[in-house]
Length: 631
Image 1 (tube, rainbow, N blue to C red):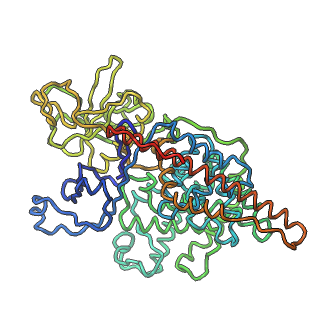
Image 2 (image 1 turned 120 degrees about the vertical axis):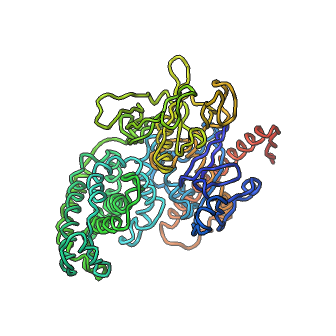
Image 3 (image 1 turned 180 degrees about the horizontal axis):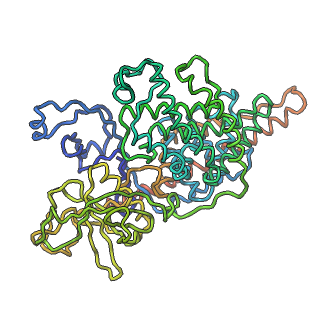
């Protein structure tokens, strides 16, 4: 879980689908581990903790609950008003707009040096969102690409590491290209899940008994299983490759422009004739190896499916992902002693390589300026369907009506503009709720209707009256996903409720707080920014810059040490040197001066932000913040 406090009110962002009580983390109401609030405030716990069952759950299971290992990270932060982040944002933006010769001396270069591998992906996501919101994602990626290509000596390692450049391009593709990926892969991936065909090429993993039950009469041989599996795999792999290689027109222009700049940088750095494949490998390494192949392997992580695959489907997806990865590698590693059982696919894979080169040539054949910035919800077009499926619906009704049977099954669609429903997906008449009218989306206590997995959507009509619709989901995962999607869609709405009732008004009182007035103020804080934290979260420049600030703050001692080292470097006295050495020393001195100035300015901005945080903290506590001493 990540908790954030936005100056005016605290906000939490949920990852991993677990809910939170005060000082307690709960696991689907059957197990728990408890931390004293003082411990969470002083020093976050780090280690393995036993998940204790509730007594009732232990009795029901006979005391044998098994074991569960859970890795949870809690981060709490305060996000200040926008004007406080303006100096830091200007420094970061200036880094990508400055002349190429100043790349190594920019604040962004200093940030890259301070970033460890553990937090590099989070930082890359925040930076891409920050620059994407300002219409500068292209120049930002180009800046990182220039630095990465310039320091690469072995072409075989180009973009193979988890550098900030690689992670940023990877996150950029997810942010702007997810709809494109769904259009290309979803039809075939859905077929694999629905048909559940047995496929296996590796003799060490073949289950002849399973193959007989599914596809043969009698006991099949390994050769028969291999031939059948090859035919099935080709039946899926062919459509996937055709869809990818025929998708030039559907690829987002921002991605195509980024790939064009990437290709140009690689060609400039490695112009030799024997290195001509590098311009293709650089792009296919991202598009195939870091985008399409991972989505095929784990469709749930890319929203291609709601649930993870069963073991056999996972194996089929793995075989398909391996094949797509080989195509993305332009067939360079085929037949080199690794996984020789993939040999039956080699003719098709090699045949596809030439098509991949043509596809990549067409992909980068694009012209136009940099992408422009957009509103906070630009990552998901307003008309696009964000989520759909069956829910049980109950309107706010008089307390005397039956509760359990008042829920009616309806099919719901959610886009950035409307939240609509009908009796079935094919039903012609739909009832629509404008997303702009949503002012709260919250869980409902299980005791309110004696039903689990219920949420409420509170809307406000033109007259200012509030209306509540109760919706029951099929399980906790479905509940979390609907909560997240509805909150993201309604994120720009200005009239959010600060509190609401997590119960229902029944028997002339609220089940949560027992107040007798239906119009009584809510007894529980709302959580408008609590989402699952995936790629489709709305752009939030302040929260993104706050995370960058925290990362810089962790490396502030390194920045100070670097500044002291730079200041201690004296220009060596002139001696008997060759002609031109003075000019070289001048260039080095200029670069060192620029780097020193960038470090000094960055430290000043960090100090100002730290002081602003102190002032807000003391305002909340009702004390006066001490002013920094001026020498």
